[in-house]
Each structure stands twice: as C-alpha cells, then as structure tokens.
Image (tube, rainbow, N blue to C red; front, side, top):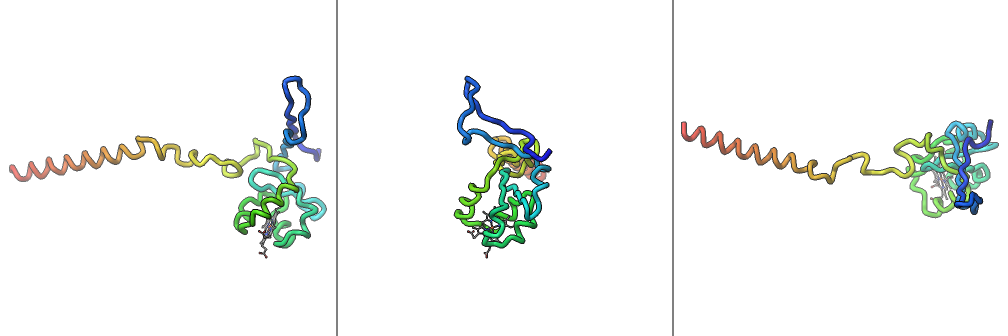
Length: 150
Ligand code: HEM
C-alpha cells in the first residue's frame, strides 16, 4: 500500500471527468513520511505535497536542508529562509497533491485568522470594559459624596 489513499476527481453533472486541473490527489501524512530518502523525497509546504526528488541537487540552499525535512512538513523552515517569489514559483513544478483534509493541522495552509480571536470586532469585546469604567466612575463619585456629607 504505497499509492495515494484517496483520489478525488472532479466531474460534471454527467459524471464525465474534466481536465486534470480539476483533480486533486490527497496524500496522508504517513504516505509522505515514507518518502524521506535521497531515492524519493517529498515535502509538505502549506498543506501541499511536493515531490522534490529531482530538485534535490538543484536547490540553491543545498540538499542537506531538504533531506532534514524529508517526508515532513517544511512550511516553517521554508518561510524562515524567506524564499523569493521565484522560489515559490518553482514549487509549482514539484506539486503532486494536497495533504488529506483529515491530516491538516489547524495552523497550516489556509488558516482563518478570525478563529484565534473569535470576537475581536464584536461589540461585547469592548463594551464591557467601558461599562465597567463608567460604573467605577459613578462608584467613585458616590463615595466622594458620602465622605463629604459625613
Ligand atoms: C521545494 C521547496 C523549495 C524550493 C523550490 C526552494 C528554492 C530555493 C531557491 C530558488 C533558493 C534561492 C534563493 C531564493 O530564490 O529565495 C533557495 C535558497 C535557500 N533555501 Fe530553499 N527551496 C525549497 C525548500 C527549502 C527548505 C525546506 C529549506 C530549509 C529547510 C530551504 C532552505 C534554503 C536556504 C537556507 C536557502 C538560502 C541559500 C543561500 O542564501 O545561500 N529551502 N531555495
């Protein structure tokens, strides 16, 4: 069992297959993890799987760094280096499919930033502190008035 675990082919209403552009192959992370030798080396970058076997000795950053990440998620190291847009363009030619949705970490790929802070723009986020401040103001005035009258 070394092939992709699931292949989803886009089809129109007649069930006919459409162009290859519309089909995505999904790979489980365990499948990717097996490709970790110089014979065959795959990487995950931002939820996409890349077969960089033939890129190994072309990499300007050397093959060592790629071998270190072999079969694993290299998103962070890839970003840490600050690769050029040329480098990002190059990724396309090695793209072979996406990470299976069940294996996607919530922090990789297309992340929804609003999930981190669910209510930053909600009124309740800032109105409660304001009400608190006003209440404190009234309390303060009340106590001042009390101490003056006694
Ligand atoms: C398939 C994925 C990758 C591609 C297509 C790629 C491509 C490139 C390219 C084109 C450069 C030249 C500089 C630039 O254009 O930004 C470069 C440099 C570099 N890459 Fe990558 N890279 C990949 C993955 C990685 C990974 C995973 C690492 C780290 C673990 C890495 C580490 C580096 C380093 C350290 C340099 C800098 C070399 C220098 O400045 O002398 N690369 N890469």
